[in-house]
Image (cartoon, rainbow, N blue to C red; front, side, top):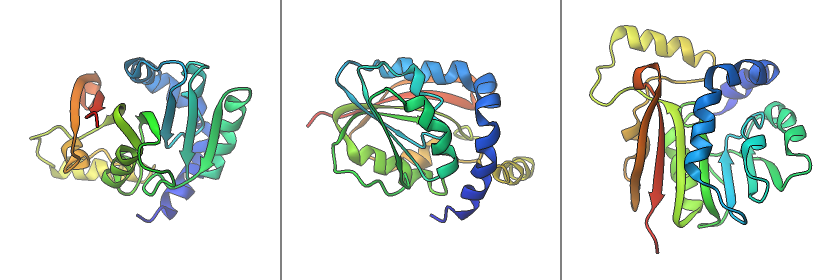
Length: 204
């Protein structure tokens, strides 16, 4: 779970993230937040909050914790958190410093294919999610059953140079997680390579 390379990459990304990412993924990110159906008084965790692009779209009555390991991304997020019930924390999302069952909802927007170990990041989020809580994932994945071709491997190496891995399968990230129901699974970009999912944790 070595984050050193990503820290260097996202120091650069912090400078341009807010300019380009909304153009490419704005609609999908809005859909991810809508699927959470957040309610007043709930507590939301955003692992990999980045520059805080999602913060202005979170209902103001929701308490938000945003965790990220890039100080440069967090610095960009701080103005978006001003005047809102938002805490921004310098934290590795692969090893969260929260108690079990601390949050009502999780928002994983474009993070599970960025961190070195996406499965570890998801398991940590699931650990701190309350029974009956829900999680939304928006990300790109290698389609289940698709071959990892030489061309796809070459594309993966290229994109990993800018901080993301397009060759992770969602099934590998979710593998072994108990008490989970997939309530929605929507293809949203690039013929389904990008998906938005709503997951529900079983009640206690």
